[in-house]
Image (cartoon, rainbow, N blue to C red):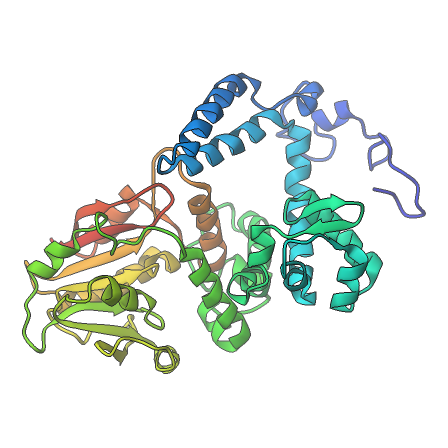
Length: 441
């Protein structure tokens, strides 16, 4: 990096008269800084973990080649841990401060100009000049972006200014996946970046109001996140595409061996008017479609509920004829009485505890004692070894909604406060939403 006028920083600091010792003593206003040996910055983070991780990688590599289930995930976790153990604190700092934000910008630019669509036509390497011509963009600009995308592993550098696709870059040529980047820019990232300032301003208290959190600061609005999406239809489409991509390829509670679907069905009433499953706030019906596909002979009605504008969109989606559409706001009393199960997928994590209690209390009167179930399909944060996707999402929820991903204790406290009890929490694997089965206490 250079100062104005092009003078190189070299090894000098950016402020006059500041040196490592002054930084340690807090001359920049950080009175709480610790006194640390400066050499820690250029030493591996946790070198004592390296031998064990190397052994784990070797072992996981063997099981991967043998086709053992989950070996890929175990190897990936060990490889990440090895990187974190080997990199120096200085390298980690630069990774967080520079590489992640700049890679994001380069990817989004690549999406905007159609770079990944051209690059992913085949496996043949393509030159920066050829790619720039194909997307009608400045050659120097494209070459600089390609260089960084190659350095970050988004694409593969095969020669001087020459690149080929990867699975990731190929996926970015499809809108369902590339919309994740546009979605975050349009309705999330600014809120996350505003979180530290919001917390500082509010005395580092846990946010508790979805209309007064860092989302409003980041996007300069008085609207709740969902009100904001309603006012920005393009962002709403991008958000829905991002959510559908996020859920792809993950175990589902409807899969055989996850939740006891046969038990749910076996004890269900089978009269013509009996409702088996109500999908509360079910968007355009992806989950009910999956349920009907995986359990085609399940008796009883399947009802999809959401706000009027969502139901209008659901009518344009090819749903199974057995799925009924119904307008309903879950902040009002549940109109369908005595269904076998009321299902909510990633609903409650969008709302504070106070709002969750309102949602659940509107459901309670519809439950038939000893018969109706409430099925909550959400993350359950473990006490140890929480997966990074869940912890990331927890910070996103804090930023956008003043809400959270909940622990087992959080779930028990919330549900018991409205007269529900958890009968069992069904979990397939780490990092995947659990199914929390509840009934009237």
